[in-house]
Image 1: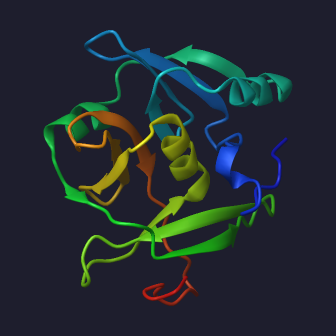
Image 2: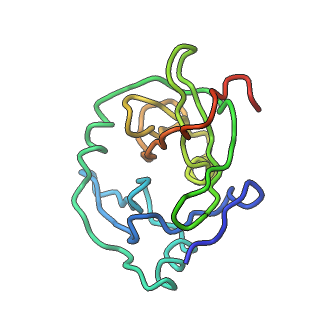
Length: 170
């Protein structure tokens, strides 16, 4: 039971992901984290997201071990990303849900980095002054303002097969 996400309401909306459950875990320092399978963030999952999962009859607070991807992210610096170059809407083939996607580029010759806009909006809202970093092909890291502490990881999306490069687009 997913709701439609549009640019008008994505800034505070996280929907039920394809993993269909909310995971929780603690890092080596004991800090709580949550994950929906598409993103992992420090802290507790937002109440509205937990309620949406419960209302859909899905599992909440399923404990898991510390994801290896998070351990790896802490060891790597990566490249700090600037502001997104473009925003577009992607429509899933299965349930026809519209998802806003923001597009970054780390350098002029690098491939574009496509990320669900709702996760970026959540990170900006939850972690004021956070920065976004790219260090591999699978995800981007959300770091504190100085770029030292990992606050989250967001999976990258493949670019649509029929979309031209977004450089210079608004």
